[in-house]
Length: 299
Image (cartoon, rainbow, N blue to C red):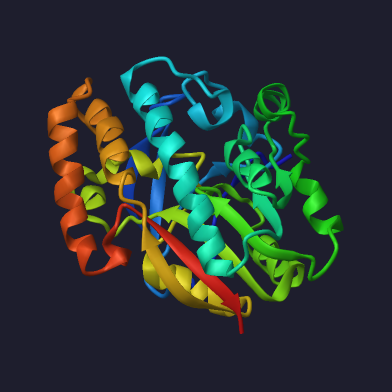
């Protein structure tokens, strides 16, 4: 039985023009090394020889994985929670601005411990949340009384029933990349919005830290997107990019983790400097940010 995936073609565009560009270490769980490959055609990168969907679970089993455990241990995770409390309201306002709706129907894919789904529910939205991790679903139920569904239910949802679908740092984890995007097109209403936030390997902090850039997060991150690759992948599934937004705080958070990976300890001052420096080009171009929010509409 095959337990890993070896790509002979780009998983985004199908091109055979793929080459190895980096070797990155899983600093969170296994300390294993993984190859990152680059597609010359669409410019997406991907992690080679990743575990199949049935075997990837062990790489998420860490109390340090904050999106599943909701841990507040350590300075970095404490800062993450402080910033998250602020950004949750930002995301709510952004979603309402993008859709033009005060209330509506939302599908939140990769809901984690349910913080964003809860925020939108409190704002009056009807929310369906999907989350593969058992621990995260239990936290969501205990903390917010949210019953999140497993990802398999994505394919049983009613067509054209959602005003918005959100993936906050989720698409890079999805094994069925093409299937998910195809299904999103079916599930969105005619004027619905698909909102995808992913790390951007073309950002300054990614160039600075190279293989130690924390947002590569191998092997949990199967894909590593550039603005060009996201635009081409969206078009392939009947979407057009209408606009994009920066995630300002991500560059600092990622730099803090990257400093820890690179030097064995986290330097808040240096990480803050690198993060802020990385954000300077973003003032004129959101696609330069460490993480980018892409707003897609059906063509």
